[in-house]
Each structure stands twice: as structure tokens, then as C-alpha cells.
Amino acid sequence: MQTLFEIDSVGHKPGNVVDARLANPEPNEEGEDPAVVVSQETAAYLRFLVAGVLTHLELLDAIIARYAPDWPVPQLAIIDRNLLRLALFELGSPLSKTPAKVVINEAVELAKQFGSDSSARFINGVLGSALKDTQRKPF
Image 1 (tube, rainbow, N blue to C red):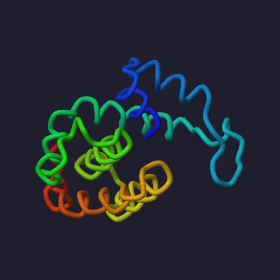
Image 2 (spheres, helix red, strand yellow; image 1 turned 120 degrees about the vertical axis):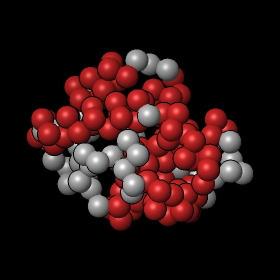
Image 3 (cartoon, rainbow, N blue to C red; image 1 turned 180 degrees about the horizontal axis):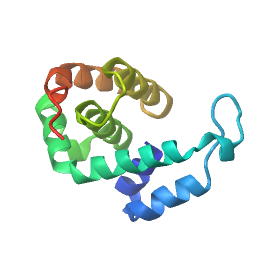
Image 4 (cartoon, one colour; image 1 turned 180 degrees about the vertical axis):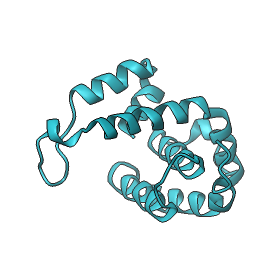
């Protein structure tokens, strides 16, 4: 999420942002050492998600526009926009093994943590409405 936020808000090159994020990971909620937290598998999944979102940006934004027609995608809060992009890609990718309920729950929790007071409800509503279409694996 933080990687996509930085790419979208500042325009930094995706590879540089991912590399910097992996070089300086943050401890997880259990306080584990960051060096232990980021495994090769986690790093590969981060790269997969970021590349997937950026590759399919137009399609993801079209899905968002379809299910949130009252809010133009460029005018959405950067957090909300990128949470939706990330979750929709993960829901729609045939390579993702994460159950839909988990993806939606994680997006809602991130919205509560980083978004505005209404972000969690907005994210949940859009993802819930788009779930049927995105589970068709369009990516």
C-alpha cells in the first residue's frame, strides 16, 4: 500500500520505491526484526502486486469508476484509490491465492488505519459491489 501511495502521489519510479521499501522494512505488529519479516516470498509478492496494479491501472480505474460512479477516480483520496486498485487486482488475479474475504478485510483495515473516517465504509462498499465481476479473474 505504501509503495503504491508513493508512486501515485510523488511519481517515483516503481522499481526504486519497491527496492527502498524492501531495503528498509518496518517491524510487523508482533515487533519482529524487519530483516526476519521480509522473506524472499514476501518480496516477490510485493513486486507481483505492484507490477500487476501498474500494468492494469486503466482497467482497475475503470472498475472503480463503474462501482463508484459518483467519485471520479483522479479525485479520490490517494489512500482510497490505491487501496481499491490493490484489492481489486488481488481479487482479480488468477495467481492470487488469498481468499476474497481476507483481501476485502485487509483493505478495510488499512482504510481504517490510513484513510479518513469514511474510507473503510467506502472501500468495503466498492469492493463488495465489484466482487462478483472481479472474481471472474480479468487480469
